[in-house]
Every structure is written in C-alpha cells, then in structure tokens.
Length: 146
Image 1 (cartoon, rainbow, N blue to C red):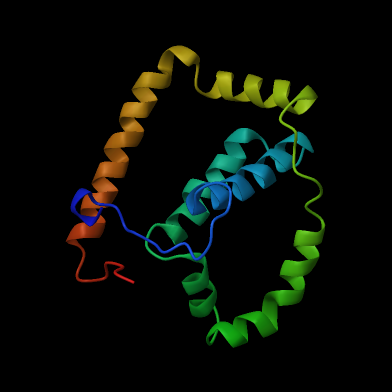
Image 2 (image 1 turned 90 degrees about the vertical axis):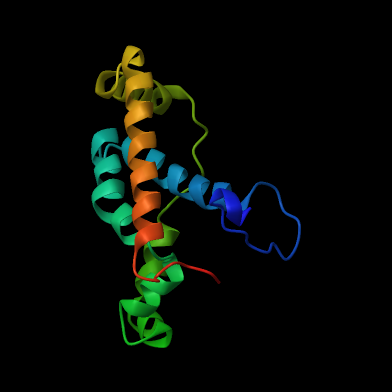
C-alpha cells in the first residue's frame, strides 16, 4: 500500500464501512443539517472545510489537533469537553437526504458548479491533491509513519 502512496491502518474489529468513510459521513451529516436548517449555504459549508478544517487536517489528525491546541490532551479535555458535549447534543438525527433539504442542496450545488463543469472541476481537484501529496512527501521529515 505504501508503495502507491497509501497509509495503512489497523482496524481492531469489523464494522460497517471504512474508517475514512465513517468519519466522512459524520462530517457530511452535520454539513447537511447546517444547510437544511438554514444556518449556512453549501458554499459556506465548503469554505469552512477548505479554509479552516482542511488546512488544519491536511497534515495532522483530530487527536493531534486537540493535543496541540492546549497544553496536551488532558488540558484540552478539561477546557473543551463540556462544550463538545453540548454542541454534539444539538446535532439532531441523521439526515435522510430527501425532501426539501435534498432539493435545496441539489439546487445550490448545481448553481455553484453546473453539471457541464464537473469534469473540469474534477481535474482541478485532482491536480491540487497531487500537488498537496507532493508537498507532504517533500516536507522535511514530518511525514506520518505511525
């Protein structure tokens, strides 16, 4: 796997879906709720990701982010665990990806990126991902190996 640029992980027991997909689905669910509930547009959700979370998580994962954002993990949890619990309790049920939210999100995305521009946008995405992979590879030994 590593020869083709993938990073193996060890799954300790079977569960539905790949680990990446499970984490991605949690993000998709909350993104959907934010748009469906009228709090953000699709464009603004995407901005939060590429300008905020994406920058943060391009080189380190959520646990390292937590650890570095305070004086270690214990400090982070002492400061923010109640806030995380309170915000998480407000998430609500997982979306069903139908109804008015479905129509609204499809409309917004078709306006942002018309279907006839998908291939062009895919190529741009792939070029950026390749450039980021090269940057990460070329960086001064801060590659993740564990």
